[in-house]
Length: 335
Image (spheres, one colour):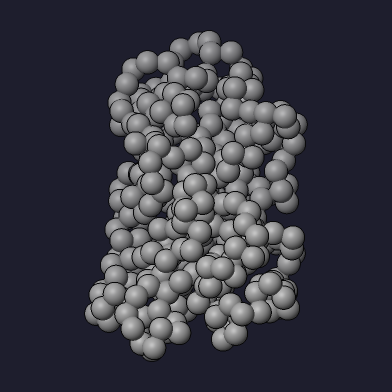
């Protein structure tokens, strides 16, 4: 497993109490039920003697995990939105201080006096920017990196469940975590029943012959296409939605391919990841005008699906992303 949890009485990688940078001195904190908890995360072992009280989240999908677990009162700050926070989390999100539009500087991060920093991507803990996990540990700040950034096996919804449960244990809200897991499973089960009821699926342009829809993901890029490979949660999402990722053989979560390669693989649907300053409509116009793609079935038939980026990474919105994608790939099953 990418993350290991156990009850332990050992020492963590950072002082268990006090403000960032404070020495690990004085009496230990009062015992908290269910603690200490030791987590091995992406090669870093940390012992939590009590739930963090001043957490900072560094990417939207991990922010939403915290909000989904009702942990906004345990947050001292947040940073780096890719798109809009869902309405159900909006009030809780607004109660948390935004430290920066993208990643905060080391100084801005320290100003929030965090005892825990939760990163969604490797870039959240960029050592060159002074935010390396070792640097933060020396400042008395515990850290956790989303498991999609350091998987030890396939990145699937099982890993998402592990992520939710791990954060639940770190913050002492195991029951809330189990509730969220059950809700996510219900969404995925609903999609599976729809697809199973229609057989294996129906590929576009296949004369009604059953088969998964051939999908190409377009994240960004003008000279080349930045797409979803086989090593990220996006690949599992496409499969669960009744599609097949045409670049599943790309052995990474994301990577660049040429538009000529896209044309050769002839996708039936192009899934656009929507985020940032470039709108999904702009991306669609670019793809429709790209001469290398003029003979691609998805372009000829103008078959596009759109997903917000925050629903395509290892966060609580991924199951809803599966449902949304399935509706767009197989609308006749959801009418």
